[in-house]
Image 1 (cartoon, rainbow over the protein chains, first blue to last red):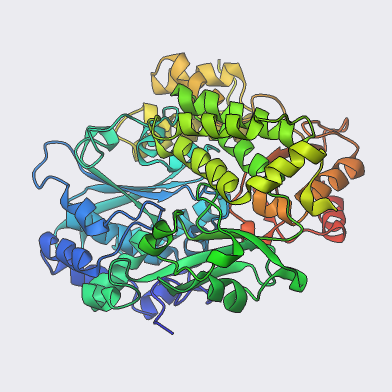
Image 2 (cartoon, each protein chain N blue to C red):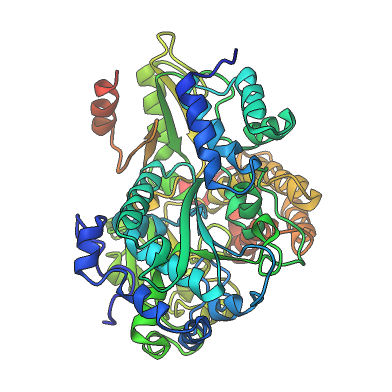
Length: 421
Length: 156
């Protein structure tokens, strides 16, 4: 079993207090980083090979290196704590139990890119998490670990918490930036990318909580140590969230590349009540569903992509034989329709159309040809939107039809569900 | 005179210091107004616009875009049950039905004594402890009928 990078201290009920964190070496890596040059820090992050844990898997070190060295405008770090992808509940564990780990990661990122401030964008519903972070930030200021001249190294850095207010779209980085600016969270057209013109038009990096929380380990132990865990191209540990029909749902930090079967049957205790597995969503609501014969896949960005799905945020939703695929797809399609920001028509109109068609099928009003119609609407969304929300909705629907078309057809023919017999 | 309390106005002035632009304070100010009045009134939106020196539409558009700002009054205990997939697989619909029967209102409704409002919501990031609900700011997880009885009976 690999060393824990993120969850090492989350089970200590006092870890959220700065005294506990400091006793266990909290902020020591920040001190070390401030003794390095910003480029050396970025090189270490590059050498680690860490890829963004929010779902897209973009190399973090490369993202940081896009930030211009000299900028007239202030630079920013935005921490994406919007955690809205259905099935995902990993960042919350870090925020609530080890907030100083995250703050240290943000500070190091800020130093590496030459930022003056960091904003933690936390989803509005995480009121407790926001309080925990505010408390941790206040403690860090008192100890001089935030604010002016940190560790006497001439580095000034502030961190603020900004609460979202119930919009999934704000997990998209440019919508997140708009939301910090007080606007409706609507994705911006790219380019320019946030690295050049992000928050308040300044060069900005947006990184997920899990990514930033891995930074102290990387800088403390060296990029190589992190890179040696898991597969070469998708290194490190990853928090997998298992929910749905399993005996032990929860958050498990495991080496990247752990087989999906092992995660479901060993770590999450297998299928609830010993029932039969029917389907698994491997990486959150936006990722195409897998069938039981595909669960030997290794859970890393490239291996899951190779079988036509995505590891996404590592949110594994397990469905047993009692689950109705059509009903499940309807529920997720309703989610996307509700959360579409409305900026571009393929997503705004398409998601609603998909809900209408699936609802007809689910409620016994389906007609022959509806499945093909649904596929055509889904294909009309994919690749035609400002941001990945529409793509996610489309991939989810098309993926389910690819794998479980018979269930949709059965609903249309028999006006009822296969699994309800 | 505005509709917001002096304390809330002070907090709105204070929260602006976190940001280089006044408009950034729109979201936190809306939360403060909601805390003050129980929901976000149009008068409060106008007052926020004045305090932040931004056009009223900039406050209004954010207040109406984000679902956590209540544009109508809600009961003292705002029950929000997650019905997204992970919760739904573990019986969220039954949880909604059970609460609805228990407090005697349909989804979206508020009890006559203003004690409860019942709503269904999208994923609250608590899928490993499904089914779950949020009452005001608090999460209640791994729900069963007995647990719901206990929670709701203990609320004022």
